[in-house]
Length: 66
Length: 257
Image 1 (cartoon, rainbow over the protein chains, first blue to last red):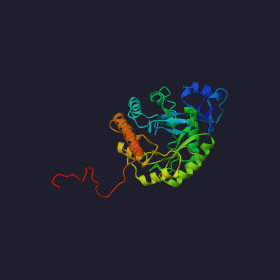
Image 2 (image 1 turned 135 degrees about the vertical axis):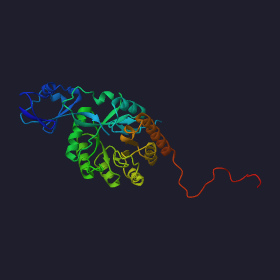
Image 3 (image 1 turned 90 degrees about the vertical axis):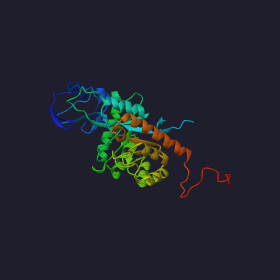
Image 4 (image 1 turned 180 degrees about the vertical axis):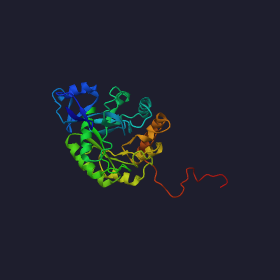
């Protein structure tokens, strides 16, 4: 299915949760925060939160800044 | 008694807050952060580069025990800033946010209308909000009324190194609000940091002045000393300025008189 991931259209397998999406992308969950359709997904909801077609997902991390 | 200051539930001894951007590399940043003596460091929230997920994380290079202050840099609307603040809280597991709502790309001056709006919303959500604002006392008061834990007026545009362009407004802000006033942005060298502290700022926040110095670690030491000197001078109480001389040596008992 197609989703918008960090601003870019991307094909991902059907039926993923936030946890399995991060695993699919090779991203360590403890270092990132995830937003699904403009709302933060807290870490306790990663297992249960399913990704649907057309969803917009942001995966962010801390970088250097002032 | 120790000379400390507080923000929400946290107490700090260091009055120098430093950013983590623009360093030549992580090891230099780490040494500069340690040399600065800072207890709080700012970080930005950005999209993860999904093609480089194995890269080193900034967090591994921030000395242990330093409090993270996530910013909302480069947000141009209240909504963007609010979303970024929420992501920063999720990343850092803390409620502090350095709130930036920028109104102009060339000067990076704050959009004070959006800033006050975002402050109100984030305070309601339980954030400890530290807004980056301009040197306007009226805006500072609005931010205090919105429930911000501090106000952070700029000394000069971000990264400009121009020093404190309007020390008089900064003083008026310090007289106007009861929350801590931190001077954020514009510092170029150690004397600027000292002047900010002499004016009565509770603390100074800087990034570029250290990160882009020829020797960032030595500049971090200089800034630390500048902040400490300025703070002590403020507490000591400077003499009033006089137009004419006031002799330091006795004018009586001169030979030949």
